[in-house]
Image 1 (tube, one colour):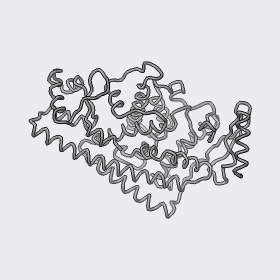
Image 2 (cartoon, one colour):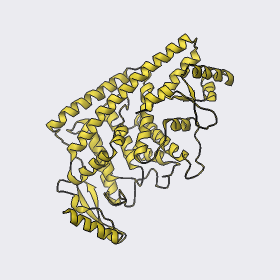
Image 3 (cartoon, one colour):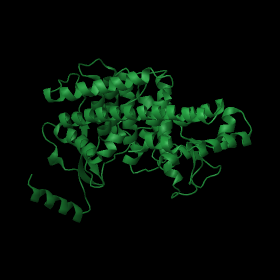
Image 4 (cartoon, one colour):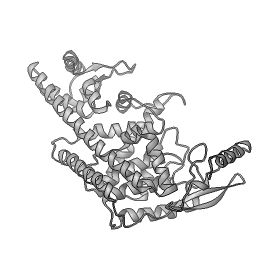
Amino acid sequence: MSVKLKLDRLSFNLRTNIISMDKGIFTTSAPGRLWEISVEGHKDWAFIPDPLPDEWEVSTDLWGLLVQAREELARLDGVGRYMPNYNLLLRPLQRREALRSSSLEGTYATPQQLLLFEIEPREPKSANDPVNSWQEVWNYNRSLELALSLLEQRPLSLNLIRAMHQALLSGVRGFQRDPGNFRRTQVHIGSDRRFIPPPPNEVMPCLDVLEKYIHREKGIEPLVSCFMVHYQFEAIHPFLDGNGRVGRLLLSLMIYEQCQLSKPWLYLSAFFDKYKDEYINLLFQVSTEGNWRDWLSFCLRGTIEQSKDALSRFDKLLKLRNQYMEQLKQAGGNIRLNRLIEHLFESPAITVSQFAKMCGIQYNTARADIVRLVNINILSESDIVARPKIYFAPDILEIAYGE
């Protein structure tokens, strides 16, 4: 279709207040079919993806990326598998995932705000209260923890995905978007209706096929299969809201399960957020052109980058931990302070009352211990107005959450 014809069509649609998905950009290589639907009495088209293939031959130019991605992921898993306290690495990775996946959807919070909300959860006072965003990000983390708990009892399933969605949207601005239930109405992506997912009567058939596919034996590399499933989930778009966040959670869980990692170490939202336009466009190009190659190449590059990034952060955190322990030794530390240091590497925020409860000591004793860490520059009093007063470990925050 010529550019002029496309512009003429768009101009007509705008004049008549009708914006439709452009049927002409879907080529014969598209991995699905277009289905005519009616929107407010006007004809439009929805895309219904075909079932994913059971066989996929990795092209020669992708093999190098795939081998490197598997090697970096294996290195990350190897380090995590044998560390005495795996939460030293896992907890910061999970919180960073919650922050970056949420920012992809336009929900923003700082690491400090998320940590503050974890310590002292509170209800938003209004629709414009920034606490709304803090809770949405915190819900992402809670949804991940719920899914990991459920995975100890059963494999990935549609019911588990629904439970994740329920946890994600409970008590936040999307609560009216039917948390925990697959959609029963038509939705579209983009104000220009750039992409219209399957009509509601096709959602469950597509999901049933996808669930069976996840657990079926396939002649496809596990990493490649996980990235294909992520595309398929987003193309089906099974919820009224939260599809992107649930889909990225599902991706990390699938990689953990299907690549047989010791823990879910790999989180790709930071990479997807860094290259947000490419992420969105490549998902779209799979639907319109069947362009699996560029989508898979993108995801494999993300696996390499995020695996290296996680290992680099862990190495810096471990060195900092040893430095802090030496500082305590020279300053005449005690068992309580050693315990506080270990806590800070999992959660680099603390209040006096929280520390007192953790160690079973008096408030004044806990306060004196925290002041000692402030005096040797391990802790710093927050400038966030909060009661109770909160203290952060700035060096840990920078390594765990900085760019």
